[in-house]
Length: 300
Image (cartoon, rainbow, N blue to C red; front, side):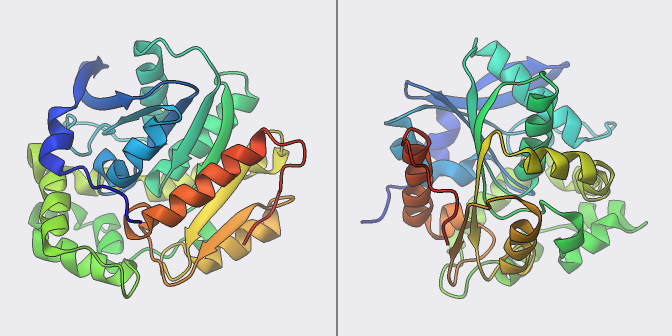
């Protein structure tokens, strides 16, 4: 049975605001129980989780924000955006909500890198991570295959490309990365674009894209953290994603001891919107296995 959608207009009305380093950040929280932090990807926002939000809130205390530079949060022009700062933001949000328990994380894309940083901080005793599940993302710079728009944003003309970025450009990019039978509707594209365009978002896209070289800088530290094996990890991945699909999962299996991976056939880069029922099934199974005496360490 399909999961109920939360319309963007309803989602926005449910948001709250807190201030992080002088900038206004929009966030959402619902449910009770163990804290579950949802971290969105580039170039979209926390509305990406709207299919999963209510089912997860029935079991956990779910928390999400539009990160700095994304969605309806502040998008300062004169700012150097950093994955490390976004990890600081996630910790500040948890502190604002007075979350003191170990935190479970479900992340996607750009959010995967923020989650990797939180995992590294866990081993540095600066964060208490209970578990982490990664959806499609560039966990390893050597397997990340950026699309043309990302390459252009990284170029010296990136500032110009970003300012010219439009809904049509977004549609063209998304056609490349979604599964053949799970592409967004025109209405969904309107909503994705609304979140990107909010607060003049296109003018900072060339600054946000700096996460790609930053991933290379942090690569060894982050991979070492994933290889420790003391925090339960799972990858749930859309197989046909050209950016970080089956080829990324293959690299994960090569590098990570006892890899726990799930591949979703015919699904692309946004499994949480393309196949939310399957993502929910595999996420809940992962969480159920955490409390089982014989937790499965691999699934595909």
